[in-house]
Every structure is written in structure tokens, then in C-alpha cells.
Image (cartoon, rainbow, N blue to C red; front, side, top):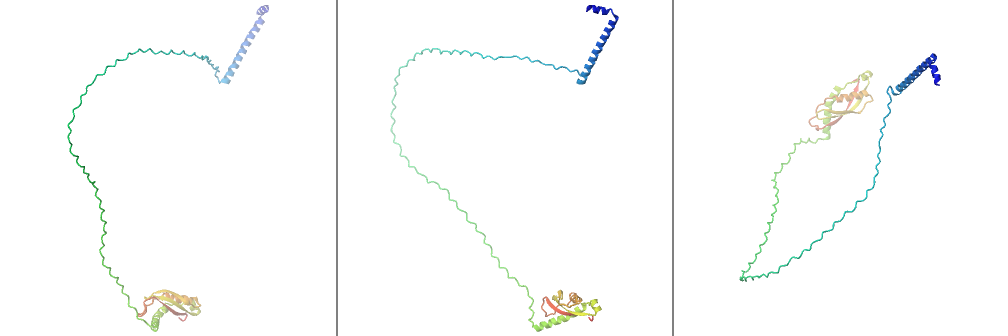
Length: 259
């Protein structure tokens, strides 16, 4: 094998082949390195992945062993007490007591009788006298009301006198009605006439209070003209002897072309 290498070294063709091999190896190594760099840039966006650092934790095992119980402490013995000799009791000393001298007997005065005081009674409250209401003063009696003066009663009239007064008043009213009567043009055109009875109420002052047809004519124009003539009337006041109260009258009115 070594002889083959030496022989190739002396051959110029073998030296060129060796150089070509070296160039191809270097080119292959550069290509592989470029591929690896491209993969790193593609996967890590240009950052080189650094392998994580693993911190190893050291575990120390500790075993708990039971300790032996402590030996009991020695109980101290009480010290022996010394015997104390009893104290000698002194002999009693005799005491000579002197009898007190007798006191002279004196006769005390007789006790005073105890006088008991009568209990003081509280004063009895006197109720107040009831209030006497004031006596109202008598009022003088009110004078009796004075009756209003009544108009003198009209003298009693007979039926004939009343009929005579009404006839006289109607004679005064009729000219007023005839003066107010207006014949409708339709009746004049047709040459027709009619009669209607009107009932009306008059006050004592001569005012017409209301009026109505009690006996109508078959012609409506006759009824309307007769009623209007009564309502528009300005009648005179009642006569002196007539009753001063509203009175109802009836009057027959002729309405026609000849009127």
C-alpha cells in the first residue's frame, strides 16, 4: 500500500487527481455548512438555538433516628431533722387580788311617769266651693213683629159686574189687535179668509205673557196672522175695579182679504 502511494506521488496525474479530490471535499463541506446555516435561519429566524441549561439539584437524604430516653434524675433525700428539746414551762406565780370596797346604797328617785303625746293629725283638706255659674240677666221680651200693611181687599163683585168689566177691557184690547193684524199676501191673492180663536194671558200692567191658538182655522196663514197680532199687542193696564192678578182672555179674530 505504501509502495502504491509513493508511486502515485511521483506521477503528475495522480497529484492532479488528489488536488481535485481535495477541492471537491472542501466544496462539499461548504455546501453542507450552507445547508445547515439555511436550516438554522429558517427554523430559528436567524437565531442560534441554545440548548437549555439543566440545573442539577443535589438531593441529600437525612435519616431520623430515635434518641434513647434520658436517665431519670435522682430524687434528693430530705435532710434529717435535729431533735429540738422542749422549753421549760415556768411555774405559775400566785396573784393576790384585792376585793373592791362596797359601794354605798343610794335610794334613787321614783321614775317619772311617761306621758304619751297624742298623734298630730294632718289637717283635713277642705274641698273648694263649687263654682256658681253667673245668673244671666233677664232680657226684655222682643217686640212682636209688626205685620206688613195689607192692601185693602177689593169689594166683592157679582158675576155680572165681573163680566161687564172684562167686556169693557176686551173692547179696549180689540182695536189694538186689529191694528197689529197683517193679512198675508197669499190670502189676498186667493181672496180667502178665516177665523181663529186665540187664548192669551195678560198681567195687570197689560203685558202679554203667552198666547196660543185654541180654535184654529183650516188655513195656516190665518192662524199665524192671528197669533202674531196678539203677541205684538201693547195692551192697556187693567181697569180700576179688576182683580190685580194675571188674567186669561179669549178672543176670536177674523183674517181675510176684506180685513
